[in-house]
Image 1 (cartoon, helix red, strand yellow):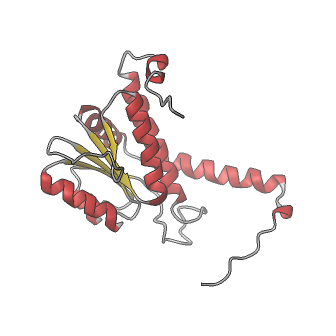
Image 2: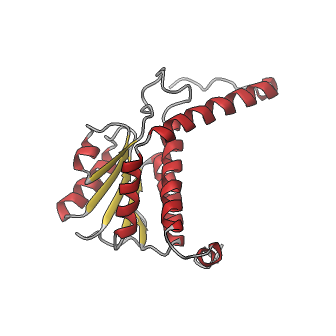
Length: 198
């Protein structure tokens, strides 16, 4: 492994900040708007209708799904993050939400295979509708973004899987917002469920 290149923070100009921000916002807006509304709506129905929701992803995608789990908990849903010590066994009536840009991340695919063998519903978010993960899924939301190994793609100037992870965040926030607005719960009621042992 070669040494990391030296980064000189003294050469960062205001214009480069504005340019980078514009690139990221433009790419994210284009990606988020290209996600099929029907797929996002189906995802919202599956999440809102499941007796229990389990979520898993690797790396930064996993972090986004942890944030989504928190929001679903605020709605009062029974939510579990796969891999936590208090996460129970998934059952046939439950929903597993999985995210992988490539749709081939081994640990995520293995979780989906296990859930499928039990008869649980699987909601996959990926860039590849023909991937192993998509093939296991009950329903798939396709995100038009590059895979993290597609360096030099014309779809994104950003590094690795950044656009997929950003789009995943917008998708999960969209689903939360839809589900919340379909309730009579005020923000103050959701806040009563927020962690108070911080």
